[in-house]
Length: 132
Image (tube, rainbow, N blue to C red; front, side):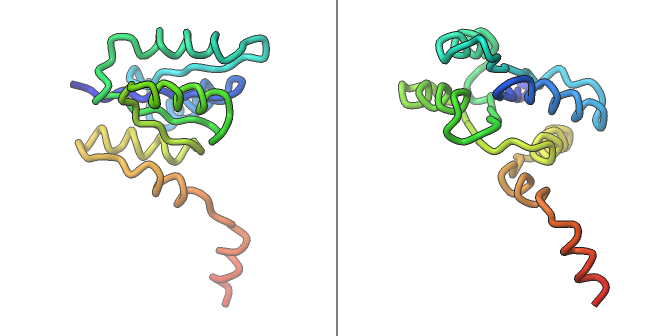
């Protein structure tokens, strides 16, 4: 079965990260988004999240959240604590999503945390070290 990725965020960050990934990798039917909008609360977000993952086997589901400790991540964390088997990673960035997509294409497990960290680079520092 195909793996599924759900991006969750405050505002429309998740939608825009998906759009950016599609700009690089083409259309992605296995990436889903759930956005917490300003007029919504945790209960609204949970309903949208549950509707999004309905029918996806838990072993095929990975969730990237924008921020540790924010409402989207906390809501999914509560679901995990109540027994749902969801793989949740906080601190989402585009490098993580691209790594996840590449791993799906070649049939490997993604190391999304490492990819996310590797995608954070101080370019000025890197360029300065190259001049030495």
